[in-house]
Length: 318
Image (cartoon, rainbow, N blue to C red; front, side, top):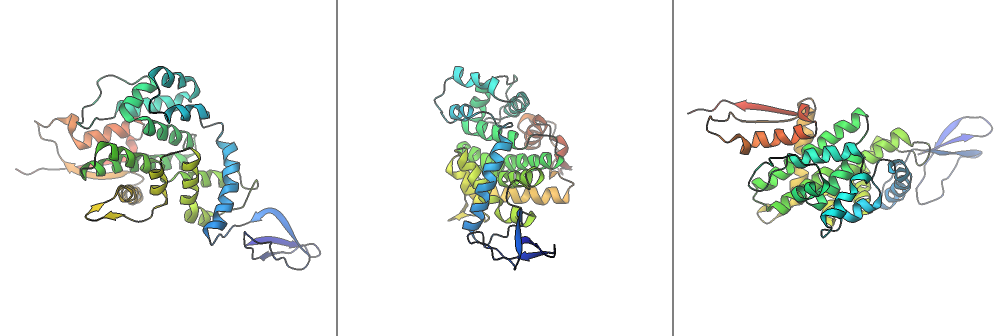
């Protein structure tokens, strides 16, 4: 709908508008710039709006996101140690510290925890891979700031990533595939984040959108963001998917990401913004370094999200 005002009476009325056509105004009507509450009914209509918002948000994000050469290096799997470590001065210090903590809590396929702290970007790459480090740098930049809503969305994104990775391992996907679903899970809601920030900070500079537009079209925004930053094609596929994709007898990686996302959303809704799960109480002779509850707790604690995890230990019977 388009807000218009009669020049003679001063009364505001509404005119229907198709984003691809010129609006039809009441007699004497005058358009007020950016007073349009967008109701996009097709992908083409929504895409035109999202492109405008992308351009505006690009300026907003410029101060948060590292320069292009950081991502050019991380896109090169052959980049040498010296080149990777020169990026330290180009990435926000807080992002680097959180990234190092996440890498320090990483586990190999054998669930062997690193014994020394991570303090260089190349060490993080060795543990997490180039693309996961790139995804984390982007996510930590997108979700940065003091806004409580952004902090909560990051907690959900991180929980989705961790849970998706463990689901993939439980389904006996290879470590490379588990890492892909961790990356996808982390970025599933980036479109929502940008649209929410746009509504908070930039309304009046571009198209006027509401929560309905955000909820319907944030996957389209997320896809455009993933493409803009040259993320692998599987990230866009995971962002755009809303179904649990099956391949014969197996749940495909796209479906694993969506399953984790839905499970986290339900848990956060029911358990005061926490990922809740129950597990057997460890036995005295259990190796706690390989206990799944310990592994998940370590990953949440590493990034300062321990308060978003709720573990209930069940009593075991002989």
